[in-house]
Length: 238
Image (cartoon, rainbow, N blue to C red):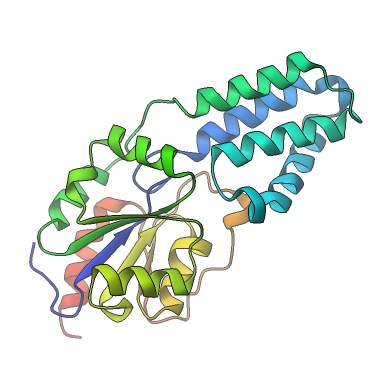
C-alpha cells in the first residue's frame, strides 16, 4: 500500500490484538473457582484472585506465570492455609496447560499485517513473559512480517518513546495499534504518537481506562481489517 510520508512506523500489540489470549485466562479462572467451591462462591474467589493479581503485578509482572502464582496465593488465603496439595498440583497443571495452548490468530490480522509490511516499519510490542510471548509469536506464523520485536515489562509513554526511536523515526511518526486503551493507546499518544484502539470482547479489567476521545491522534476501529483504510485516510489532506 502507499506509504504516508508522515507515518513511518507501526507498532502492534500481540495478545487479543493479533491472537486470542484473554479467553484462556477466563477459562482457567472458572476452573480455579470450581477447585475452591467448598470455600467460597465463584464471585468471591475471582475477586480475591483479582486482588492478588493487582498486588503481584509489581513483583511477578504480566503473564501466565504470575497468574499461576496469584492463584496459588489466593488458594492459600481462601482456605486459611488448609489448601490440599492436590489442589496446588491442579493449579500448576492449569498453568502449564495455558503455556501450551494453540495459537488462534484473530480475523484480519494476517492480511492486515501483510498489507502494511514493506510500506512501513512494523514492530511487535508486547508485554509479558519472554518465553511465552516468543512461543506465541512463533506459533502465529506472523513473526517474519515484523521488522522488530520488543517484549517489555510494561507499556508506558517512556517505553514507546524508546521503542519508536530505536526502530523508527521517533513517536511523532509512529502509530500503536492494540486492544488495550491503558497499555496500547493512551501511553502511545502521551509519547507523541498515534493510538488506534481495536476493541476485543474480552479485555482484562486492569486494562480498562476511559478512551481519550478528545485527543486528535486517537482513533478506534472495529477490527484490524479497517486499519489500512484508516492509514490511507491519514495520508490524504483535509
